[in-house]
Length: 89
Image (cartoon, rainbow, N blue to C red):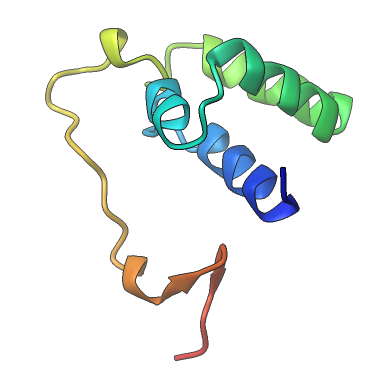
């Protein structure tokens, strides 16, 4: 797997509104595989913070636990983002 794909998975995992199911559809990584990847790629303290956040109820990482009022999120800068970096404006 390329580093840019790993970076994107980590970015999606940190986003509260991106469910694990979206990562599974896009990259084929199950929740357990994402957890394993995060454990391997992040510092221990960062991994622990991420796990606390995912399990705290703040995050909406599981589609079945999501508030139905939360729809698909689209960033206003989405058109200008390429390769996980915001291009010059």
